[in-house]
Image (cartoon, rainbow, N blue to C red; front, top):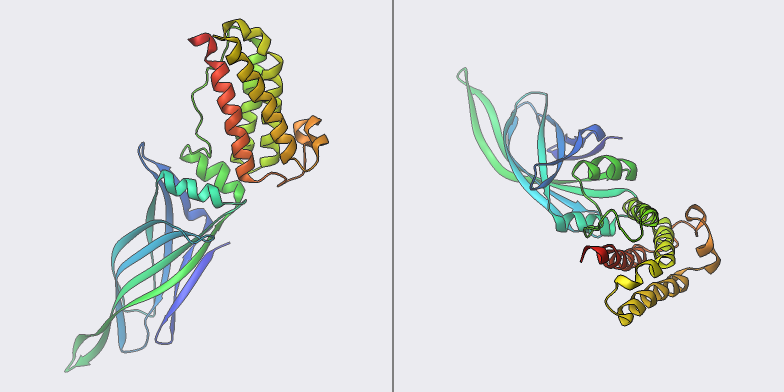
Length: 297
């Protein structure tokens, strides 16, 4: 579905629109960009008046809440002196880490943006005097228009975000093997990777379920690494943190019986908020990071 908006010069409608397949992302090794091709259909206001589009300023914002993510200005120098004139510009909006964090923090499913345009125009009158075409500046003005840009969750997560290598949660580096846990550690990492995937997909219920599965496997195997932990106190700390996290999850869950279920049966969609799932994920990550580095010290 094409996203469009318009404004008038005198009585003539001037259109701005974006086609869904004209939205891409790019990463240049340092910065991430949301690249949007913006198309225009401009119309001559009347027989005697024409106008120049000198510049187009665009502000990319979140719809809710209204947060400015990126802004840029393009110098156009377009002269509209025909009945209808079509053109386009490519806007490469820089998305820094703060902008990406804000998008994911407030996104609930689809990614909903707005783009506010400010066009710098010079209006002119065009007359023939003694056989010569004479143009005189009538006035300069700024016209404004706002366009809603709604990107489906599937496209935003699977195509646009993945194309710039962005993840909602930044992983601490965790060893992918463990000499003391061996096969059990593979299962632990598998469950934790699932938790991260579901968080990035905004399926917070499944994220928590896989965090629980990670903790289950981790706790069952703690005895295997007990002798490598520097002190009995440190071991008790690790054991107690795991048990406390279970209790925490139980208290958050609206139905405690779902915790014993397999991940795909655990709870209902949107049972957990983003903040709850993120907190549980980070505690699980911290424990896994501690255990993962025990045999590396």
